[in-house]
Image (tube, rainbow, N blue to C red; front, side):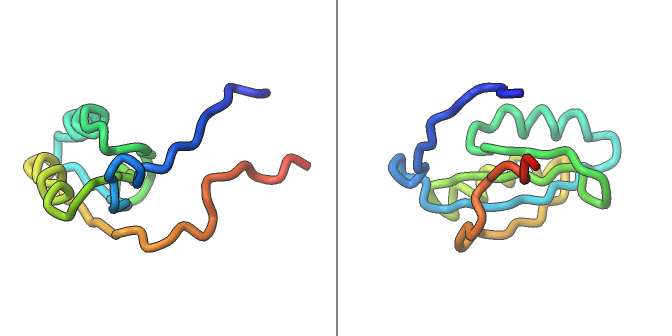
Length: 99
């Protein structure tokens, strides 16, 4: 089933020089608040709710390390975060084999 189509835009054209993957572990009783905060921060461009120690794995685009710190500080009162800066994307999001 075809669900739609999209246009691919390079975030770097808008000054977003850094991309990060953030693993987010909400503090006890903070799951819904953390999810609400992630949804409210537009620099989070993707987020999956997952099983395991971390509840969320999210992709984030920022203009600077300072902006990254500021955004993560908003979450840190409700969650622990672990961040990795993306150096390169050798496999972009793609569909699995259809056959």
